[in-house]
Amino acid sequence: MNFGGVTIKDIAKELGISPSAVSKALKDSHEIGEKTKALVLECAKRLNYQPNLNAQSLKQGNSKSIGIVVSTIDNQFFSQVINGIESVAHSRGYNVIITQTHESYELEMQNVRHLTFRSIDGLLISLSTETQNIDHLKQLHSKGLPIVFFDRVSDEIDTHKVVADNYTGAYDATTQLINAGYRKIAHITSSVNVSITAERLKGYRAALAQNNIKDDETLIKYCPHGGKDLNEIENALGELFHNENRPDAIFTASDRITTTTLSLLHKLGFKIPADIALLGFTNTQLAEVLNPPLSSVYQPGFEMGKKATEMLISVIESRYPVTEFETAVLPTEVFIRASSQR
Image 1 (cartoon, rainbow, N blue to C red):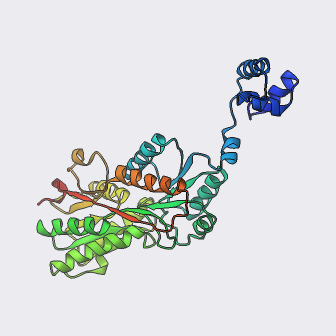
Image 2 (image 1 turned 180 degrees about the horizontal axis):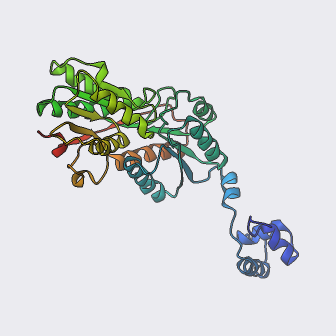
Image 3 (image 1 turned 120 degrees about the horizontal axis):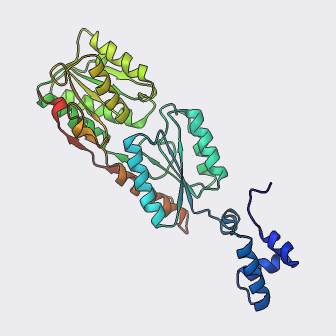
């Protein structure tokens, strides 16, 4: 059974003429008589012929498609990024193909391989928490595939990048907790492999140092899969609450970790912020209506998606090789609500 649809050869066979004559007739070539053109157009309509966009893209050297790789689309932050990507891509005539890694390095490689088989014009990628080796991306970039990193980036490829101001967001969030009277501030963060982990940890530590609070390594907990595995966060909380230097506040460093920590604290019977305060990175639109309203560091996800797509398309459509690249740093914003106020 032919799932490929009607082709020029099918029309040619139906009319008893050559495929090249059909092709020229569909392009309204002066080489083909009006009577033949009319017959070809009538047959194409009757057989529901649709042009083969993949074949056309190969001839033209582009597919008008952009590949996207994110961890999960159910993450509010990445959903907002994708909305930003689509807003620019569609306005410029590009389609987007979205894939999810679920924080798996193997799945990231498979997704990238699949996207290149689809003849994408460029790739937008936020690395998985498991990714340490980016040879799969280096090889494609060396062959000329335009790649732009966003959020979780790598310095091993010289290309455009778009990130949030993670350092300042973490510094401001930790400072807010200190100003509210908290001194034993724990930090639950993601994998050490991920760029945002180092940047947010640096901001957290800088705020402690600025306020003469000793940096206690036992209060810093890493979630190798970004909190995708519930046990990661359960174990982190268990270790913190059995710590001699038990925390009076928690600063969480990612969307999933923040909302899951809030849920687990409720299940464990903690009153927030009476027993422990919570402030973390999250783009959930429900922050104000959670119990209690959740203090959060907000990243401009939509704007990040727009900026990354604009950068990628500028490389795709450039007539000359692009040799100068930019790392765009977008501002974060801290919203103080009841979960971190005494």
